[in-house]
Length: 261
Ligand SMILES: NC(=O)c1ccc[n+]([C@@H]2O[C@H](COP(=O)([O-])OP(=O)(O)OC[C@H]3O[C@@H](n4cnc5c(N)ncnc54)[C@H](O)[C@@H]3O)[C@@H](O)[C@H]2O)c1
Image 1: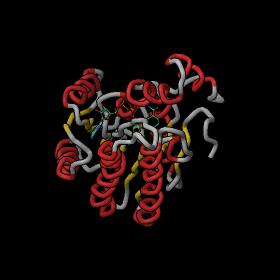
Image 2: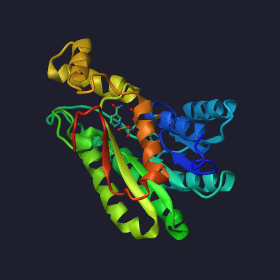
Image 3: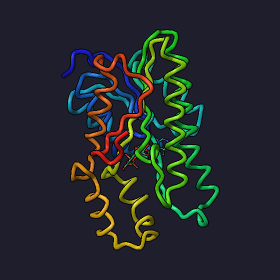
Image 4: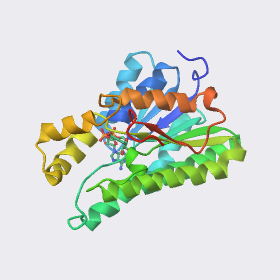
């Protein structure tokens, strides 16, 4: 357990599975109290219960990050039950692939609502509570797709570029108030978002066989393996720690060397 993380309070959105779950579990194992937020009550409850059964401090809250009322309630609940919020991880996000011609514009708007509006609402509410205290750490989960362009991923790339923009502007505005804002840019993580929501249609558009496409993607990663959610949780731990106290506004690539900037 990390002494510095003990007694802290963190909110993690989209923490019912995948990367958010790994971050919640990691922070809890280091002694931080976590609010596990997710649009899906069942998965949020399951993660919080599992953390508690392992001796950690966690509560679950249903929150759709597109909805400002849900965001405010999530902060109110965390503050009332766990205490003032030290850390926010804006992790909730959705993926999808389409050619430019076939992109459905309602799906485009919804992706922006979750991936961009949701991140901004989280940053806004955290700012209201952290700025007055003069401390806090915010992490936004962007993507390698926030730094490069990829065929058939226009909407996803656009939202993740926007997350990096929000991160930089907020970091600049909040630096003098002791609130650090950073982004993490994962690569190819073995979660439902990648394997079920992105990969199948992308693979079809690229004209590959399913397993071949996955194998080709993994073969192109310099470190030579796909990513696991724990790789992102390690980076999140690093960025909220005291060791990172002079780091703000960065978009840290955690992708096995796929994007080296
Ligand atoms: N998997 C990857 O390869 C990868 C790569 C780069 C970035 N990311 C980013 O990491 C983050 C987490 O992705 P993941 O791979 O763990 O996905 P996932 O689909 O496994 O998990 C996402 C979680 O977010 C929740 N969620 C979805 N919409 C929500 C909403 N409106 N409000 C609240 N919660 C909501 C889901 O219920 C789910 O529990 C996302 O922002 C994603 O874009 C993932």
